[in-house]
Amino acid sequence: MSVSPHSKEPALRVADLTHRFKDRVAVDAVSFEIPQGEIFGLLGPNGGGKTTLFRVLSTLFAPQEGSVTVLGVDLASDPRSVRGRLGVVFQSPSLDGKLRVEENLMHQGHLYGLHGTALRTRIVTMLDQFKIADRARDNAGELSGGLQRRVEIAKSLLHGPGILLLDEPSSGLDPGARADLWVLLHRLRSAEGMTIVLTTHLMEEAERCDRVGIMDSGRLVALDTPAALRAEVGGEVLTLAVADPDDFLNSPLLPAGARMLDGQIRVETTQAARLLGDLQSALPGRIRTATVGQPTLEDVFIRKTGHRMHGGPES
Image (cartoon, rainbow, N blue to C red; front, side):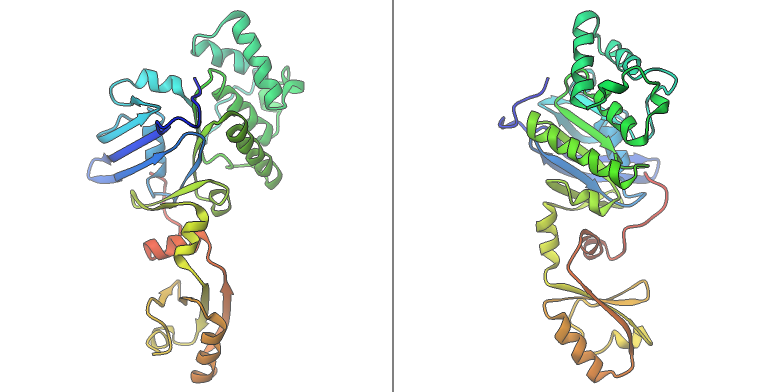
């Protein structure tokens, strides 16, 4: 069911999507398109709305307002066809730990109407592709977290979907397993033209995506490549821990846009070293510590929202 990445039809089109829980707006008029063959990340804090959006995209929630089109099929009018075009891996484990790896795949195939030789052939292909053939007869619960995630992705792709949806794919994985997972995802994209859409709250994970949509309070506040988003900040980020920060913030030496964040002064500037020297000369003894760094996606988030990326329970 995969479609050529050179097709003009977007893999996913979201238009003015809004979803409410009583009086609370969890997704607020969100619009974007994802071309085929792209790795697209939804980055945001707990409570930012990305999980609600994921649940709509995966057909768990019906769109309340706006529309979602998956490989040319409208989600609201034909959710059954959309499900056949999607492979979905949720954050919570979906494997039956008491069943063998191959048995987990077999039952998944039955859910999609696969049987007999066609299913057995597909299982062998998936086991080989994901380098888990030697664990086929092991109970899924005996595998490491990284191997279990491989089995879950293999299971989600058994029916040949065109889009893979992943909710917080690195959750619970150690750094080695996380790196292996990304090698696998990039191979799926480059070798098969797979479109991959994932949610994450990890900056380093978002950096690995082709494009990133940043969400906060239900809104899509930024969307571009990681490099382009960081370039919007530009220059360097100077962070100062100072005595009496409220008074320090009124210094005429500070450029427009300097702000207080978590009790420190944060400044975006193209001349951090010169500015720091001028401040130390003009306000001797006031600066306790100073750090200078290149812009990150965290800095992009701060610039767009005015606060760091943290929050309460996910929505």
